[in-house]
Image (cartoon, rainbow, N blue to C red; front, side, top):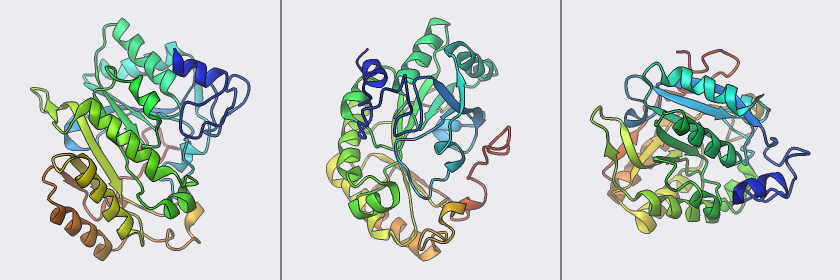
Length: 303
């Protein structure tokens, strides 16, 4: 497979194109070629159409191709996970699917696309056909996303920046806006703006764009939704998150050292409504108190 060669010989799988031979050393993302998984867990805190009442089986990969200073999942994005072979990884997932979970989510998968493909294909070989959610930071190569067409049912990108200065300062990726805009257009080409639901109300196919509002970055948030309105569609479903909470790494780093204010959040919400978006979700303003995980616990989201 094209992306497997990119991973094993000279990694160009993601926009970093770090050129590492991940069979021999770790790439920019901090991982090699194994199934480096930090957690396989049921999560009930996703958008209603994704988690429903039963939750989603989320596979949290270790490492990340972005190095966001404020990363809410810093416990796993900066560290390696357990290195599974494919069989134990599949076994952990099927044990949850056997409990009636209808969908699986790959979280932070940009640097693990070959592993994602392997898991999906092996599940299908064993007779499991869950709804597949690709939960990404949107720092993706279009060529890589095209290899997922027909395998991914729901794209769930977190569109972080339209401000390249903030992208460089906070995530070490000045090219993030350009890269993410191209990636979002490819996801939209594959899925369009319609959300298709199962009989039980679960999202069967489609695309939801998330955005985390950050402190003193209202203009960035507005830029994100203006792009979506002007370049994609006002019918696109969005999910606006208020759950930003300072991590230990940024506690002395203004403005990331504080939560967003109610006024900042209201300003973003008002602009989104003014643009004319009709579909999606606004997260509760007090969400920082209960949406952020602790990966030192067996159930990172507290059950």
